[in-house]
Amino acid sequence: MARDASKENHLSRGLLAGPLKSLRTKILVRWLVIAFCLLFWIVLLLVFVL
Image 1 (cartoon, rainbow, N blue to C red):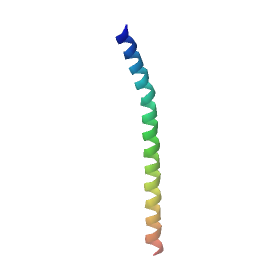
Image 2 (image 1 turned 60 degrees about the vertical axis):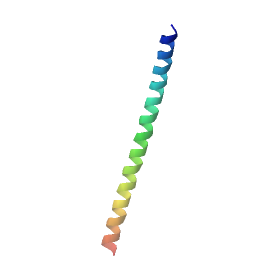
Image 3 (image 1 turned 180 degrees about the vertical axis):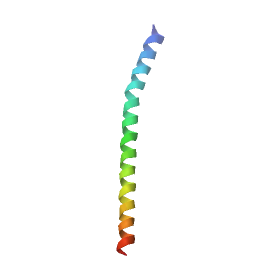
Image 4 (image 1 turned 90 degrees about the horizontal axis):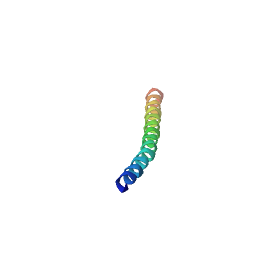
């Protein structure tokens, strides 16, 4: 009985922590892509202006 309860707690913790981590990484990757695109366009504009 004790083992089943600990497995359930571990599984529920894993299920709760999983989406939070994946959501956090998705947000981080999205901001990195946005930052890279902005940097690319700024460099491109500077090359054409200068």
